[in-house]
Image 1 (tube, rainbow, N blue to C red):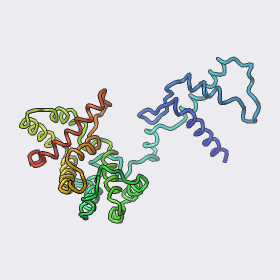
Image 2: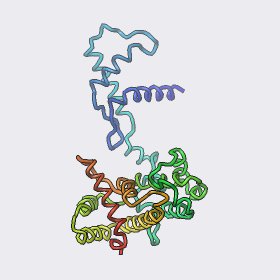
Image 3: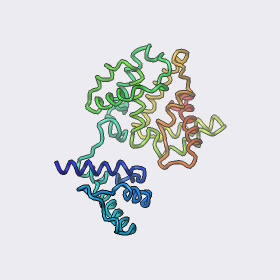
Image 4: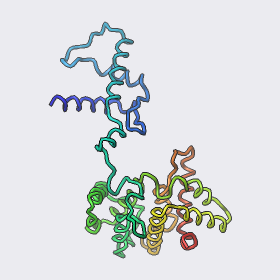
Length: 288
């Protein structure tokens, strides 16, 4: 019981000073403003565990030194992400949040089973395909997470049982957003962005074709299947109002992003949309 109380107290401290810390890529805590965190702790911890007031005769500098030591000890004792993975406590999910190749079978086409089944269920009903704002409208987040949980438990029947098409499209978008490396890999990001801005259409198509050919088989096959599906969505654009530019806006940041954060995110975002738009407009020429 005592351990539980201590853990609760630790999390209370962490939650209270969350504005003064960030998380490193290894999962450890980093104090972004030691002085501000210390001041918070100094002002908030005026009583001891037994309720007595701390000895205010101690200098502020001494108190802050002690508090820094306590905070440092608190942050250092938390396990890193690498430690949790090594111990088998933290594991990749079977479908979501993995590398694409890890969730693809060995048979052609090398497309994740979840992606195949999800697309098939969406396309199984004309009403689904004609739904206004298909892929643009967000599905209920809690329902999307339920689908995610079911899929990670290998229950793909949950897709067929879901009645809200926006939940299905939301789950499909979430799958691509949570890949450890985007569907259009980091190595192809700059090339694709550059190709999308070319004015000479013949040269643009040639470069996009080369990019597609260079993709790993799982990425090539999955991108091809997804784009074919999105083109089927545009067949019903009079009903669902999802034209190619609209779909490109939705899927630009979903299918590709830079390995390191760009200094001009808005410009890159616009160019990402242009890449997906080009793939859709000239699908047959690019994937021939």
